[in-house]
Length: 169
Image 1 (tube, rainbow, N blue to C red):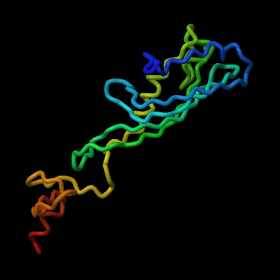
Image 2: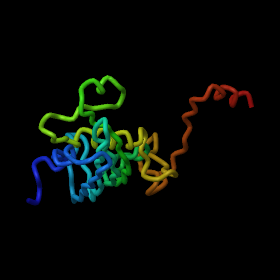
Image 3: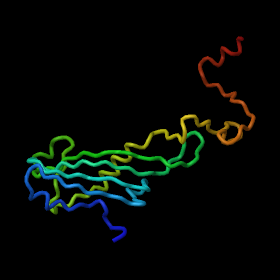
Image 4: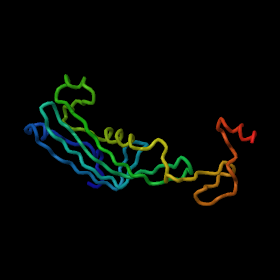
């Protein structure tokens, strides 16, 4: 099957019946994957490793994928590579779920990792994405992309508290 309906739903029933210390790795590789309405990743790859403990299943994973972002200075779209990891504990018993960062293993023994991957990936997106650290942005007068060409306008807008002092000189 080329595009499974739930690519990140893993049946862990066989791990539940193994001995404590058992680990199993699940690799993922997709050209394009959609993690919700607002996050599409290309060149996606990663692995999830699930290990059995006496309390539940410990899941760890490392992932990489590219997404398109808009530069906050010049408003051009650019590809940004996300690298992130996850660590979660899925408890066997509901008594352990009151602890922070502990989830309950579903009765079906199928874990849907899509929401977890999306949440961790969104945390890796910068608040103010820049396509380059030295991005010059747009001209405040005419809107010209200053990375491509200088329009000749000077930045005369000075909003600092010391702007009035320039008139005294």
